[in-house]
Image (cartoon, rainbow, N blue to C red):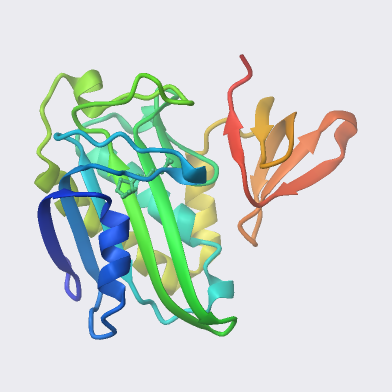
Length: 246
Ligand code: BTN
């Protein structure tokens, strides 16, 4: 583990995010990676289930950075870049690994990981803790997923040990967190943009209460996605998902 981080491993948990949130109630607990061999109630974004059989990486980082809640816009992109670099270090050619807004990582247009960030703030000025849940498809992937998925095994026909993947991920998280803290969001935005999926192309945009076709154009300095819709007018997206046009 990089300096300042602990790790705890459980063969089975309901959800590593839930366990990390429980750990956070102990205010003495510093930055800690919680890892599970499998999850019985893995959680996905927007209330979805994250199928979690043995063989993939399931982990959550409990983290208490000295940041205000209003300073967290870069976080999803910092995490996505760390996961992308991990997948590359595990053997997948970098040209195939793309970041999809807001915080997915795709290989050959298929989802290889899931990221679920939970934030607890004391008030607008003070963050209590963050729990950053990450699942990387090493050996398996769900075939009923809303977005087509893949795994490293499916691509490379090579078994990858979850411990090795975690070692790489924790190191990459530390690198990109340092880049963010030392150089600011501009460097993160630039790097994310270089490997972004579908910028400038027509995509299906889905939000909680809307669904429309638009061209994602740019990651804005406040973390929103600039989308151009029919007639050329612009929208800024802060929550939702981007899909291929079928
Ligand atoms: C998504 O819907 O794309 C996000 C999925 C996040 C899954 C990971 S697996 C480890 C951590 N524990 C959970 O229950 N969820 C996250």
